[in-house]
View 1 (cartoon, rainbow, N blue to C red):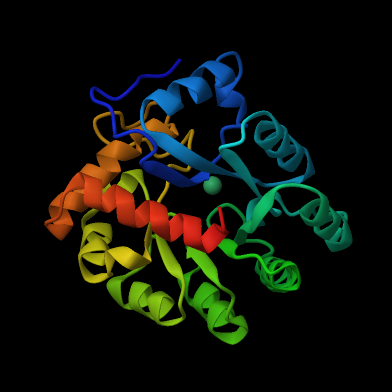
View 2: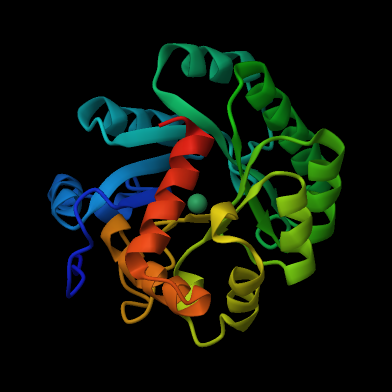
Length: 263
Ligand code: NI
């Protein structure tokens, strides 16, 4: 099941820029949790579909709940070995459904160190799809910082690098490209020192808050099922780092996400 925060964020103050509420970990209580979120200050949620089936699951959520939006892509670790990704099919979905971004796409050398070149090719094709559809991209980068930067610098998409795990220098380069930095539960972890430094150095105007739910639950819920209402704990930590109020953090980061995704 799930646990709710010990206090409520102001009404309609949280925009979760990256979640997977379609995940099977929510089976049996998905509607209950989504409805509870509205009472805990969640205004909008972007769910990321990571293959055809999960894209359809996310779309079903956005058909049912008007505050749930969908991003579509093949996650780098979900790229099929034996078939090509049908980008025309993805474009068709974008044209006919409420899709607000292409993502999450990118490079994952942690789970798939075996097909790096294929991942790079597909990442570029996702960027081209996003440009064709005039949508931002949501980038996944795990253990692939150098190649991710290379592709972003060459192709210059607009969008966000989600669950950012790079250095301060890399974050600054991303901001220079006009992109956003996605920050989630890791910010609250004891071993989140580098991310805290990144958050200190990057303007609040370039930060998006996210959960990556059901993963990456912030302290004091680390290891438990994450969901959008728990973003309040990330916002609290960010407010301390920035020396501003939690309300200010929520207001600015919500506006950032709404502007980027046009929601
Ligand atoms: Ni994700």
